[in-house]
Amino acid sequence: MTLYRHSVTITCFPRGNVRDMTKKIGVDLPDDLYRWMQSEVRAGRALSISGLIAEVVEHQRSRAELSALVADLRTEFGPPTAESRKRIDEAVDALCTVQETEPVRRGRTA
Image 1: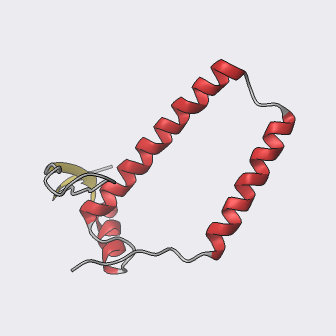
Image 2: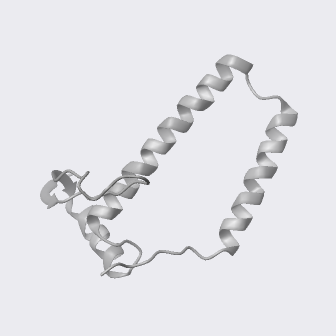
Image 3: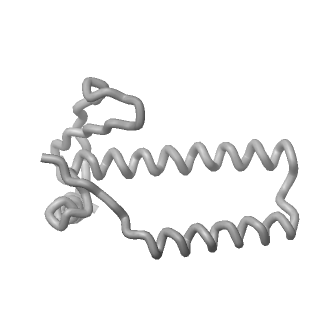
């Protein structure tokens, strides 16, 4: 895989943070991935390349935090029972149904 250097400004405003709390960094990305991000912005599925990268990193951080929480719960309470797994599956199915029926709202800013 060949990497090409694309200078990307990462600007993320997580809940509770103010505009001055951002860092400008350089990111090395495969050319096809950079073109995909550009197409996401053009199609309106992302506000900016910086915003898309920040969203992906935030998602990854949330997954890591959730994994740590699950590990802590397993240590404290042991693995889930069959009944617990059934209830979890039902809750996830209900959540997925809600997400599929509700439109995703993303605003574009000037």
